[in-house]
Image (cartoon, rainbow, N blue to C red):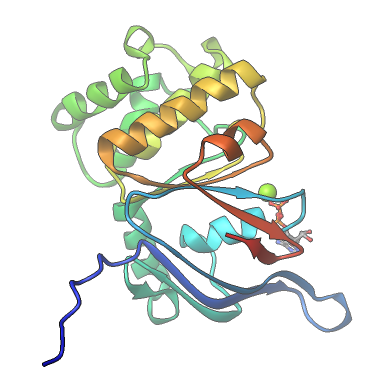
Length: 233
Ligand SMILES: Nc1ncnc2c1ncn2[C@@H]1O[C@H](COP(=O)(O)OP(=O)(O)O)[C@@H](O)[C@H]1O
Ligand SMILES: [Mg+2]
């Protein structure tokens, strides 16, 4: 009798020989080549490599911001090749959050409204969204600052707002592109600890590009990238 293996949970990201090149002919740049990897639910992965090694390109594929030019990328089991732009946008809106090096907050909006923004785009009124927004603002430690604007906050606090904004929809995956790259090491350490706490508490999957040795040490899994290839997992 055949033994039936227990079902594996669907990977959050699966890449099969994925590549990405920019331009054509003599000027072509192979930003990524032959990348095969799987990210499972709840993982906390650091993506490490020098400038220009392909970290942002890889994160853009994992976040459904960009399409591969070779191979396959599956997000929550769905092939990017089989989705049109509108379907990819829906997948992103429902399942993926983003955090960037320079925070990318809306400067004229309050902390509350920056965090509410993704819910607004999904059609929630401020009133309906209020508890959900305030809960996540509290989780990132900014309850006392929810009326402020980003310009009135420190860099670390602004990154906390960006993390709250990424988390407010409880996405399956958060992709963070050098989230500590613009912070001093103490503040960077606090941000890494916050991300780890959110990973534990919400089981959110994180993939985080970084030059930080602290993050490399604290991550549960490390991917090293060089010249567009994964060289170590
Ligand atoms: N839009 C683009 N057009 C052309 N080349 C690009 C583009 N984006 C990235 N590249 C090139 O792809 C390579 C990888 O870039 P990137 O993914 O930004 O690396 P990293 O984030 O590790 O610094 C680099 O050689 C970069 O110059
Ligand atoms: Mg980059």
